[in-house]
Length: 265
Image (tube, rainbow, N blue to C red; front, side, top):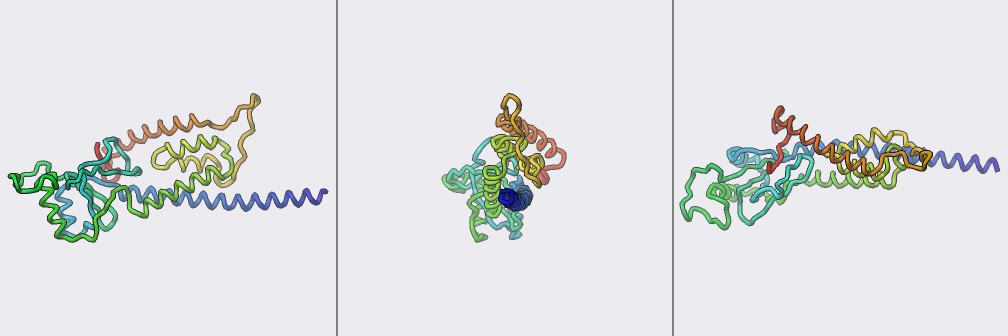
């Protein structure tokens, strides 16, 4: 009997060590994915530019894809780590978004302060927002770019990376060891509510990522001592507000190249 118990204990410990190894590897992978996603998101975030910059990129052959739109799909501010949408009205302009060969994205508004010809018949108002947009679109057509870019949310690899990262997070949160410091719902709100994916970094550090820990036992009154879901929700809201204020301050000091501006603001 004693031998059977010892063998069962040895088998259990071996299984735990194997799971612990996979747990550590998976968390390292998640951290690497987050770093790649954050860097790619910052690099490809749309940055405001002038119409002169659009003409220069087109004439120099740096422009590889573009999209006309009436404006941004929402009026709320977005950050460089969030998706952006375009409001399409069926006309070209006034918003013009383009991508260069290095995956940098820029946007500009045509027909503002335009001093060119505006007499009736100079452009089709059903197709263009103004004469300047019509004239520039003719240059685009003659340039014969390889393709029109149908979205400005993110480069294709970045969109796949974000989906892979979210799938990995949910898999570990649901199927992994029970969290020791907060409930699963607490960490769900932290992971989805804290901006820029920084909830992942906090989770990896606070939950002892390299040594899975058992949850703390209930208190004398039977209450779960771990952080609850409402704490995670409040943390997500508070950090979102704090991040917006911090980004605004950094943008004023460092400029838009380092801290991309909110479109539509």
